[in-house]
Image (cartoon, rainbow, N blue to C red; front, side):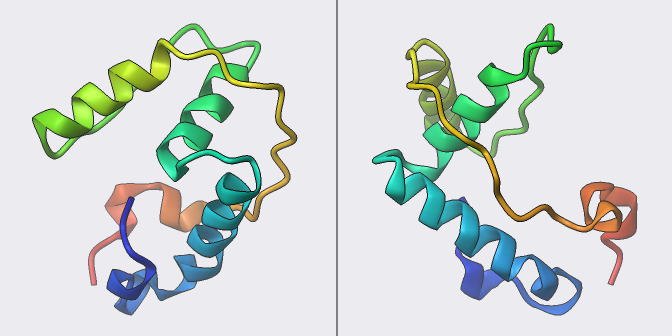
Length: 92
């Protein structure tokens, strides 16, 4: 997961979202990736998940995490602004 210190420019607004996610993951005794995977796996209407990876080790971590069963969690996290969700808006 991106360090919040690396979020500059147009991504600055995501710092509170990242910090909130890390805090929630920590409170759940999970790594941020595990917390995100637990959330993705909890979506009842989802038929699959799409990931982007930067390395083989990231892919292995995701595959390993998807095979785990996570406890039922409450996901009341801050949300990224809808403009930041679409990569086409990331031009600075």
